[in-house]
Amino acid sequence: AAIGKAISVLHSDDARDLFKRSFGSQSLIQRVARNVVVQKVVASMGGGRFDKVVESIDKMVGVLESEEGEDLKRKEGCEKARAEDTRKAVLLSRSMDELSDAVTRLKSEIEELNAQVKDKKDNIVSIEEQLKEAKRVRDDENSEWLRSDADDRDAAVVVGNAIDVLKEFYAAKAGLVQKKTVVQRQPVEAMAAGAAPPPPPSTWDTPYSGKQDENTGIVSILTMVKGDIEKDQTKAKTEEGTSQKAYDTFKAENEQQIADLSTAISELEGTIADKEGDVQDNEKDRLTKRSELKGILKQIKDAAPGCDFF
Picture (tube, helix red, strand yellow):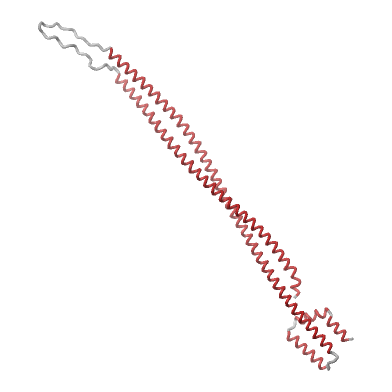
């Protein structure tokens, strides 16, 4: 009865766990030595009655060693799985950090590109205002030239008409004076008998001009005035052409600058759109990796009780 009770005690769950821990804390040499001691004790007692005890203990030891091997394998597998999961978690965390850094960098670049777009748009507005002001000035100058040119043209016509009137007047007056020219006669002296007759009286060989020289000077002055007016008109026309050419050049250059800025803006906005797409993709990838990381961390946590037991 005592032996049966001893065997039942040795085979109970508590005893098996206790033996497993005990064997686990002892070296193989200690366990072998203990078996030798037990065998010596049994031999000194003459055997027989304790054969079943020894046999049961040997079986128990075999079971414990078998379970120890299985536990070792389970422990190694658990540690390997935990190491792999930990490595995955580290890589996912690192990848998430890289994605976060990429998003931050992309947003900074987008902000800088938006600033460039704004600067170029402001530049276009400034150029358009300059063009508007230049057109206003050019239109005012052209209107002033048209008015001045018309005045000069009319003034030249008036002076020319005056010159023609004076020329006709003085020509007519000169002709009238010529018609009234008479031959001045001298009294005829008595001629001596047999003497030759005296020469005929002298007449005017050139037509009478009176104040014609003075009048000719007035016409000359008016002619000079008309010439000055026409010179000023020609000069103003040349200056108008130069101003118009300068405006056309200024307008063409600034319109080309606006076109170049508009092209640059389109390119920048395309780059911004691409980077915004990259931000969305990176944020989406980060969320995916975050979900994967949570799953792995849960897996490590769930496996902890079984792994920490060994």
